[in-house]
Image (tube, rainbow, N blue to C red):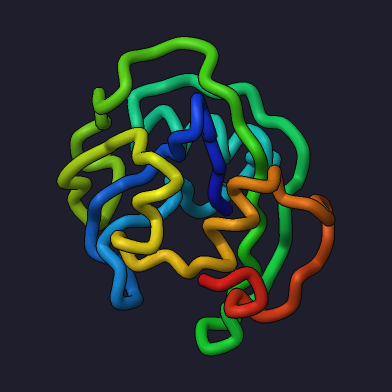
Length: 138
């Protein structure tokens, strides 16, 4: 599960090793036993970024078919906290940086034009099952 925080034309990203060619990714992680999806995203966002969020609408659900994983992504809004106050050891892949990145920089960081356009346009069709992750340009 991941969260999308967009503020003033910038998106919240993590710089860390991923399973793909990009080092920048959306914050998020796995649901632990006994957690709801919203509780898990609030916890993951706090651990990985240092901020507390209010979880909003479901943006999309898609598949990582190669890993047998469903990816669920929610819109989120920062409500408090210090950006970059990462909980040490909370993630198995060390987080090098937490940053609000201009949407125009997404392609330079390895994100597709399709995903960039979805961010700029406010995710039209939010709440939909999108099929494979490639359908949203990731």
